[in-house]
Length: 252
Image (cartoon, rainbow, N blue to C red; front, side, top):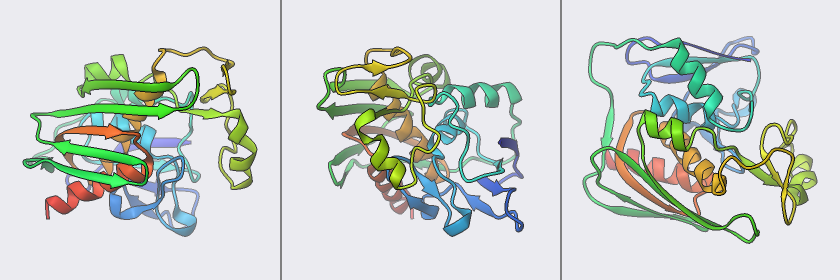
């Protein structure tokens, strides 16, 4: 169960583990990243919180700066595998303006980041824009590219409903490593080597849309609002986190 509560002015985004006796708080910051395989996890040891990116993408798009996210377990509910349920819930809760100015990371000089197979160009932009390209050797995916100016309206319309995806051939290997314990066709797009199992695609290019949303969730870990054009080729959580680290280093 996840509960989102107002945060004190200037306190930032923080996760609180209510299932642990000490009720530890983990800041949603790139310095706290613990793992990036198939998800982004923050915290350390028993305090680790997995798959924070879907909830944090909604937090970023809503320009929420101070928030306490309480969890009674190690992961926010996956729900339908998209960002939309969290966007709907947070929008419905409403927000209040605090005194002071939000933290901003404004890119003024282009730079590149390469991490494994992922490559990024981060360029100046008046706002936040994503141009994302993915490549998969699968008949329903192949090469997909999309470009979006990130606003609440555009996110709600074009990205929020895009679900995470995975392949039946990988399920057993991933579960043997402690991943995908609750995965099903109701919480992700599930693919065989030729087709989708269960629920149909919401867009033909739902895959690249979800990867773009993941970038937003990982960018939330800079701890402020990003002004940049992020051009991503074959993005990954590891690569997204490397971009977030580079943005925070550039501001130091």
